[in-house]
Amino acid sequence: MNKIGNSIWVKTLWQISVILAIGAGIGLISNSLRPDSLQLIGDWSAESRITATTGEHLIISLSEAEKLFTEDAAIFIDARSNEDFRNGHIAGAKSLPWQDVDRLFMKVTEDISPDMTIITYCDGKTCKLSHDLALFLLDIGFKHVRVLVNGWTVWQESDLPVERR
Image (cartoon, rainbow, N blue to C red; front, side, top):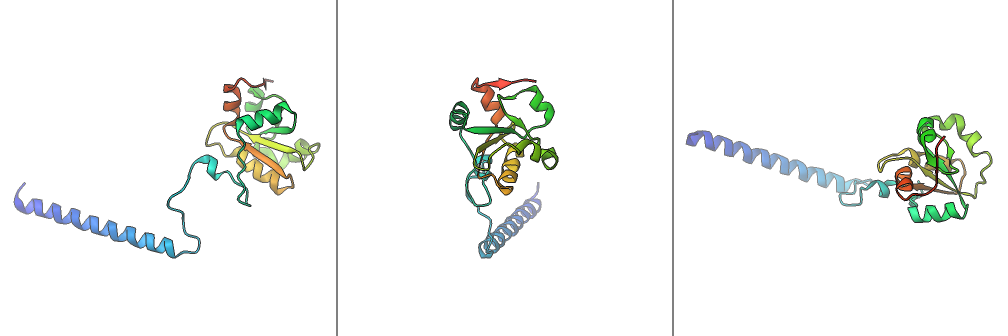
Protein backbone atom coordinates (compact mmCIF):
# COMPACT_ATOMS: atom_id res chain seq x y z
CA MET A 1 0.00 0.00 0.00
CA ASN A 2 1.06 3.52 -0.50
CA LYS A 3 1.57 6.10 2.21
CA ILE A 4 -1.86 7.72 1.64
CA GLY A 5 -3.67 4.35 1.94
CA ASN A 6 -1.87 3.59 5.21
CA SER A 7 -2.72 6.95 6.74
CA ILE A 8 -6.44 6.55 5.91
CA TRP A 9 -6.53 3.17 7.67
CA VAL A 10 -4.64 4.49 10.69
CA LYS A 11 -6.96 7.49 10.91
CA THR A 12 -10.06 5.26 10.57
CA LEU A 13 -8.89 2.83 13.27
CA TRP A 14 -8.05 5.73 15.58
CA GLN A 15 -11.52 7.26 15.07
CA ILE A 16 -13.23 3.90 15.73
CA SER A 17 -11.19 3.48 18.93
CA VAL A 18 -12.13 6.96 20.15
CA ILE A 19 -15.85 6.42 19.37
CA LEU A 20 -15.83 3.07 21.22
CA ALA A 21 -14.02 4.58 24.23
CA ILE A 22 -16.48 7.49 24.42
CA GLY A 23 -19.44 5.11 24.12
CA ALA A 24 -18.08 2.85 26.87
CA GLY A 25 -17.44 5.86 29.10
CA ILE A 26 -20.97 7.19 28.60
CA GLY A 27 -22.37 3.73 29.31
CA LEU A 28 -20.39 3.34 32.55
CA ILE A 29 -21.33 6.82 33.76
CA SER A 30 -25.02 6.25 32.94
CA ASN A 31 -24.97 2.90 34.77
CA SER A 32 -23.36 4.41 37.87
CA LEU A 33 -26.00 7.18 38.03
CA ARG A 34 -28.97 4.79 37.85
CA PRO A 35 -30.55 3.78 41.18
CA ASP A 36 -30.87 0.20 39.86
CA SER A 37 -27.43 0.02 38.26
CA LEU A 38 -26.10 -3.24 36.90
CA GLN A 39 -23.37 -4.95 38.86
CA LEU A 40 -20.29 -5.06 36.65
CA ILE A 41 -18.25 -7.49 38.71
CA GLY A 42 -19.82 -10.42 40.50
CA ASP A 43 -20.59 -14.08 40.60
CA TRP A 44 -22.68 -14.84 37.51
CA SER A 45 -22.74 -18.62 37.99
CA ALA A 46 -26.05 -20.49 37.84
CA GLU A 47 -25.70 -21.29 41.53
CA SER A 48 -25.44 -17.65 42.57
CA ARG A 49 -28.60 -16.72 40.65
CA ILE A 50 -30.74 -19.30 42.46
CA THR A 51 -32.20 -17.16 45.21
CA ALA A 52 -35.61 -16.45 46.67
CA THR A 53 -37.20 -13.02 46.35
CA THR A 54 -35.94 -12.38 49.90
CA GLY A 55 -32.36 -12.83 48.68
CA GLU A 56 -31.96 -16.16 50.48
CA HIS A 57 -29.89 -18.69 48.55
CA LEU A 58 -31.91 -21.79 47.73
CA ILE A 59 -29.05 -24.10 46.78
CA ILE A 60 -28.55 -27.27 48.78
CA SER A 61 -25.36 -29.30 48.51
CA LEU A 62 -25.46 -32.92 47.45
CA SER A 63 -24.14 -34.03 50.85
CA GLU A 64 -26.87 -32.10 52.69
CA ALA A 65 -29.55 -33.46 50.32
CA GLU A 66 -28.23 -37.00 50.82
CA LYS A 67 -28.35 -36.54 54.60
CA LEU A 68 -31.97 -35.34 54.47
CA PHE A 69 -32.82 -38.24 52.13
CA THR A 70 -31.24 -40.79 54.49
CA GLU A 71 -33.06 -39.31 57.49
CA ASP A 72 -36.33 -39.19 55.51
CA ALA A 73 -36.46 -35.50 56.43
CA ALA A 74 -37.23 -34.04 53.00
CA ILE A 75 -39.51 -34.53 50.03
CA PHE A 76 -37.81 -34.55 46.64
CA ILE A 77 -39.80 -33.10 43.74
CA ASP A 78 -38.67 -33.64 40.16
CA ALA A 79 -39.39 -30.64 37.91
CA ARG A 80 -38.54 -32.49 34.69
CA SER A 81 -41.07 -33.86 32.20
CA ASN A 82 -43.13 -36.97 32.97
CA GLU A 83 -41.14 -38.88 30.37
CA ASP A 84 -37.82 -37.98 32.00
CA PHE A 85 -39.27 -38.90 35.40
CA ARG A 86 -40.39 -42.33 34.12
CA ASN A 87 -36.91 -42.93 32.67
CA GLY A 88 -35.38 -42.41 36.12
CA HIS A 89 -35.64 -40.26 39.22
CA ILE A 90 -34.44 -39.97 42.80
CA ALA A 91 -35.98 -42.81 44.80
CA GLY A 92 -39.26 -41.73 46.37
CA ALA A 93 -39.39 -38.42 44.49
CA LYS A 94 -42.66 -36.91 43.36
CA SER A 95 -43.11 -35.69 39.81
CA LEU A 96 -44.28 -32.13 39.28
CA PRO A 97 -43.25 -31.10 35.78
CA TRP A 98 -42.86 -27.34 35.62
CA GLN A 99 -44.90 -27.16 32.40
CA ASP A 100 -47.87 -28.77 34.24
CA VAL A 101 -47.46 -27.07 37.62
CA ASP A 102 -50.75 -25.14 37.47
CA ARG A 103 -52.69 -28.31 36.77
CA LEU A 104 -50.90 -30.75 39.09
CA PHE A 105 -49.51 -28.88 42.11
CA MET A 106 -52.59 -29.44 44.33
CA LYS A 107 -52.54 -33.20 43.73
CA VAL A 108 -48.78 -33.52 44.21
CA THR A 109 -48.50 -31.29 47.29
CA GLU A 110 -51.76 -32.11 49.12
CA ASP A 111 -50.07 -34.40 51.66
CA ILE A 112 -46.97 -32.23 52.23
CA SER A 113 -46.85 -30.10 55.38
CA PRO A 114 -45.91 -26.44 54.79
CA ASP A 115 -43.06 -26.94 57.29
CA MET A 116 -41.57 -29.96 55.51
CA THR A 117 -38.29 -29.47 53.66
CA ILE A 118 -38.77 -29.79 49.90
CA ILE A 119 -35.87 -30.29 47.51
CA THR A 120 -36.57 -29.59 43.86
CA TYR A 121 -34.31 -30.81 41.10
CA CYS A 122 -34.02 -31.14 37.34
CA ASP A 123 -31.05 -32.00 35.14
CA GLY A 124 -28.24 -29.85 33.82
CA LYS A 125 -26.26 -27.04 35.46
CA THR A 126 -28.28 -24.40 33.61
CA CYS A 127 -31.69 -26.04 34.05
CA LYS A 128 -34.09 -23.44 35.51
CA LEU A 129 -37.07 -25.74 36.02
CA SER A 130 -36.16 -26.63 39.61
CA HIS A 131 -35.50 -23.00 40.50
CA ASP A 132 -38.81 -21.86 39.02
CA LEU A 133 -40.61 -24.67 40.83
CA ALA A 134 -38.90 -23.78 44.12
CA LEU A 135 -39.98 -20.15 43.82
CA PHE A 136 -43.53 -21.25 43.03
CA LEU A 137 -43.64 -23.53 46.08
CA LEU A 138 -42.33 -20.73 48.30
CA ASP A 139 -44.97 -18.38 46.90
CA ILE A 140 -47.81 -20.78 47.71
CA GLY A 141 -46.69 -21.14 51.31
CA PHE A 142 -44.04 -23.83 51.69
CA LYS A 143 -41.38 -22.52 54.05
CA HIS A 144 -38.33 -24.74 53.48
CA VAL A 145 -37.66 -25.21 49.78
CA ARG A 146 -34.21 -25.87 48.35
CA VAL A 147 -32.78 -26.58 44.90
CA LEU A 148 -30.35 -29.38 44.11
CA VAL A 149 -28.53 -27.97 41.08
CA ASN A 150 -28.05 -30.54 38.31
CA GLY A 151 -29.80 -32.86 40.75
CA TRP A 152 -30.51 -35.87 38.58
CA THR A 153 -26.97 -36.06 37.20
CA VAL A 154 -25.13 -35.52 40.48
CA TRP A 155 -27.43 -37.97 42.29
CA GLN A 156 -26.74 -40.72 39.73
CA GLU A 157 -23.01 -39.99 39.59
CA SER A 158 -22.87 -40.48 43.36
CA ASP A 159 -24.61 -43.86 43.09
CA LEU A 160 -27.46 -42.75 45.33
CA PRO A 161 -30.83 -44.55 45.25
CA VAL A 162 -32.87 -44.11 42.06
CA GLU A 163 -36.05 -45.58 40.64
CA ARG A 164 -37.09 -46.22 37.06
CA ARG A 165 -40.69 -46.71 35.98
